[in-house]
Length: 419
Ligand code: ADE
Image (cartoon, rainbow, N blue to C red):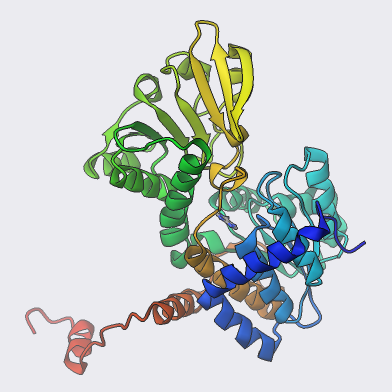
């Protein structure tokens, strides 16, 4: 069996979804046309663990057009779109993914992808890479390298590298300017707020929104929530980030203080238990809790379960936890990344994933060519790749760059004062 999906009959709907995404991902489609001619992945197998939704399908088809045999699974048990998985299977991609996988099924699917003995990995969160290092060591020598999509994955991989445990090179797609500045900031902001509104139908204007973490993701969410009329409070542990939040005009407070005022809490830290039971005890009746980080560890869900005397699903992806004193707290999408895990969550906008997945496609081709010569550590994506993505994106948007004059170029290269 070369695929395992929820229902193969969903394929026609998934195909239309993928076509819609293709129309809105001009950079990746330009790369697909180029790769169809040059076949940089000919004879290679790419194993991927990515949120298996319509934009990801455009990447998978691009890797296949480049000559690769592609095997793909999800990187979160709730983020797969079953229609898209079915359509990919029909396209000849080896896909093992469905929405609502158990933990056991999730790992079985990662292993199924590794059974293809991939030459290159494309990962989001580093579960696939870590599985190779823990349970599938026999594959290490075969793998030319991997590319990693997200901050959480990069943090895990840097830890592995610092302990000498990373056995092949990894391209830090997440850290590229054309990823981090757009996907992490604008992409997560729009997709997170879209998901909260889509799942709950709640108004953001006038609400007290508490954003935990002021990295790129936190910055994006605060700015867009403010744009929607929210009163935003930031919780931070880093002095520089906290100062930046304060000077961007946000109230900065400790969690214990923010807990009392928040109507909506959004975690973005990548760290565990940033909202704990002592905070939940202080929250207002009706507070909504959700997470925009990669793993479902940021809200202490076991503590919430223990605090609750009653629990029920009030809407799809909205769970109500009633506390002893009658207050009710609402957890979205089981505390998993809300912008992808909810039934109504769409993931980042297509135009954003266009750049992120263009970087993935180009990094994969780079690894095919240079992977064997790279040290086993986390590598920056070469600047030429970043510039290529930015230039293609500008072209697709019809934006032209100003050209410096000869005199200006000369001036910038000079060093004498006043000349
Ligand atoms: N769609 C596919 N991958 C995604 C990601 N990492 N974040 C948001 N949307 C996505």
